[in-house]
Figure 1 (cartoon, rainbow, N blue to C red):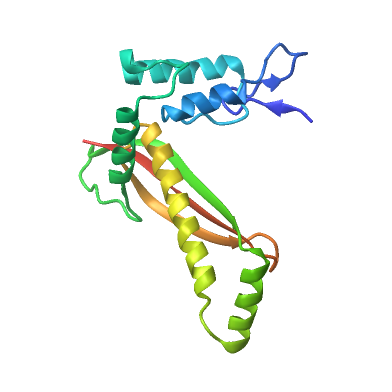
Figure 2 (figure 1 turned 60 degrees about the horizontal axis):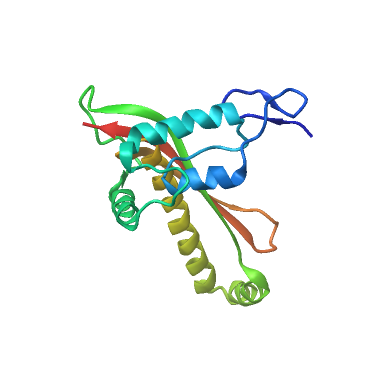
Length: 186
């Protein structure tokens, strides 16, 4: 099956000369909070590498993990990133639209959870086990969304939409998706 670069659309194949970037190199760049979509060709990957070099300057060393202080500051910035279901920036020019941003989390509930929730359903009670799993998945999803928004240079996400989906027709796989618009505010 053919793979195509998500950035430029080139067919990634040794026959076309476009090579897919090594996943370990993608992961290394993600440690520096530069979100790189997959699959991506080597040529387009170099653009993301240049973005990281421009953003972090002399602090950026591609072959090394980010310093602990960088990671602490990055986590604080991501945690502080504001997320809104509406647009609070009324005045014209108050923000720059950076594009759509999303985050997803898929959770399996396991056999025991399914059995207990079936009993709760039969008795007409709330399933605290499912509620806890959904809350956990929601937190993971929101963190992914905020991390991707931050990697785009966003200071906020507006127009957040959340969806909950059962993936396996009663067999315990749940997915939460969040999508919004990443913006940079003044």
